Image 1 (cartoon, rainbow over the protein chains, first blue to last red):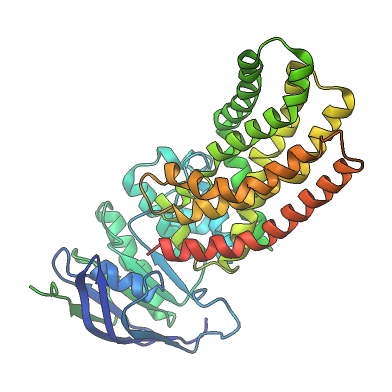
Image 2: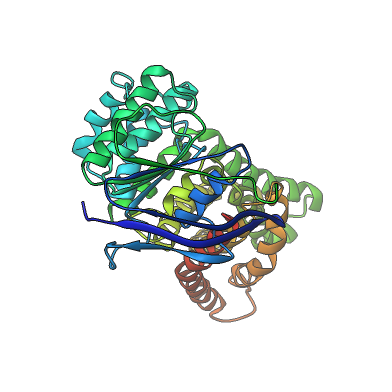
Length: 206
Length: 220
């Protein structure tokens, strides 16, 4: 895993004529996690979308130092949002294998990832029939099956039970111990031991 | 390459498992083709004269019906956002989706041609010509449809707007597709086929870039 650091400077974002992010700056280095907290509508998800390159900010920029210049620009990060990107009509294993192939992961890690996610035995089950929590676990299994240094997680523990939240905490701790970095938008406490900073966003214009 | 094949096989798998969509498309194509003879009346010479136009209008309408689902489900379940982090560029992924979409919506029309040929009283030559023009022309329809689908994917009622964008672009395909049958001109068939093939190749090569650009913008 290459050492990547993330820095955002002076991000200004407007959506639908409303200022969402005003002069947001942040920096995350390897082995570090940044928790974005704040009330609903404070722009936590929007900040992650900007970092993932899915939203273009009006001002400011996001820089990744140490990223492979020949690789596609966002091939070093994982973004796990509210929409799980899981297809009904495909089995659990087919869904994960598809993303491993598309995102460039390793197929031999699939079994372990599914087991860690608590989905062992459900490989041939239609993913459309999974519960909300199981769907979220399957989405998070991508983090394990496809090693990437930067994780951008939007409410990773929502819909998860206590065990699941614990698993996410462990996942994060291992990731950070291996030199990875993470930015997590959450309003729930994630139980994990590791180096983390917290940044509280306030509702712009409030 | 793995990513390309993964998209191709996933879309084919999904399309074939939800076989209802495929059947609806083919039935729609055949029904439009069967309806028009009823409207025209039992005049066989007139009917076989109109046959090329009927076939191509039916094909165009059937294709329009199918475009909306090209990107919509990927947009709604968040897959499209993840494609941006893929090991392959979005253009490449869209190209794979286009090929899968044509195999699922263009090829079945060709397969259903014998039924239409029978209803419309096409000669054997006319049947083969229709098959050839559909094979050469429908990829262009898929390509234009993809641009329309990509532009409107962020709109809730995009399915109604897309045809307005797609239809004008599809006119050349319609003109050459039916022009191939013109008995008055020598060599009309081969010329039209070549032009259709050229149109399909160029549009299939360029549409992924246009559609990917539109998807990047409408994803915001």
